[in-house]
Image (cartoon, rainbow, N blue to C red; front, side, top):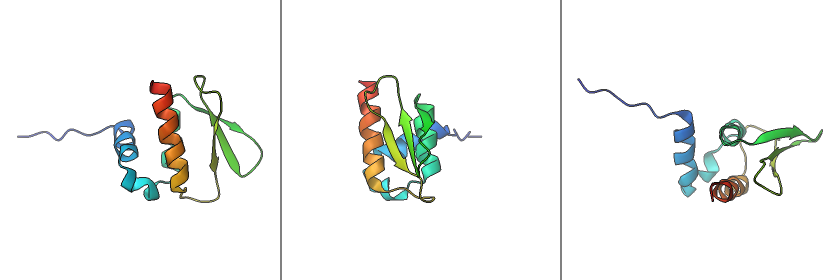
Length: 87
């Protein structure tokens, strides 16, 4: 009997992040979960944007919270930030 290995949500999100073709298919919840899993914290700005910061980065990541889906440009920013903190 073969066992199916389940990918963790962190692994699934990283795999999705590495597939540039999927940049249009991200939800705000997915992006925020990925950031949380990598040590980012959200600070409330009182606006419609959510600012995420990480101790290793000089500037934060601002995500528009205007709906369920987020724009591909935000995924590119997240991809670059994760690459920077991972060295």
